[in-house]
Length: 213
Image 1: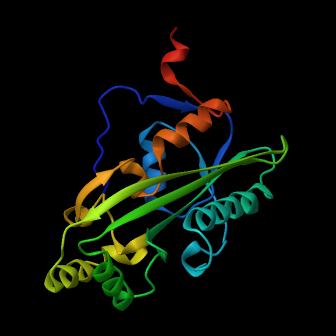
Image 2: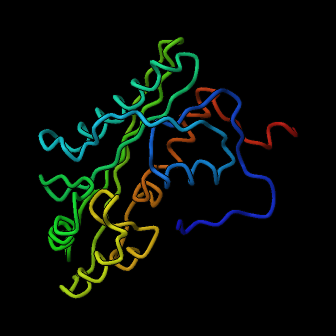
């Protein structure tokens, strides 16, 4: 579930050049589809940043996003390939996706009552044009203080298991956040405003209204 609704009219954007999303994330697919984009989905097979515990969080996310995009761009050199990666950072501690429920419990216990950063990096690659552009967005999230029962109840839903930091702000995990500073869709998994800016800059997508002017 995504806490965003589509309107009754046409979507605001359309894809004008071949676009490939190098991600298995259903949330990223839903966000781009909501904007009216059409694209292929090819999973890169690159290891998530979850297993890369060394280095600044922004660098970890950027490296992983670029590796995902470049791996898929090898197969589609004439297409525009978008890779992305999201990490949650509490000080120097970087959280990726929990391996199991026990790890999800530990992550949420650490995030309880604390302020953390959600960092998403995205990379757009077109091999035939020798174009690689990587950008990142950081959002600050403050969790309410959670009781052990609240943490266990949330983990028992199963929602945390495929999400960086063990929570989904767009789903049942919405109750965890006391405040958000910055991009909401970044916390969902893709900083939509910034990604669309890059896609429009590169001529990959265009506002639908341009066709009528």
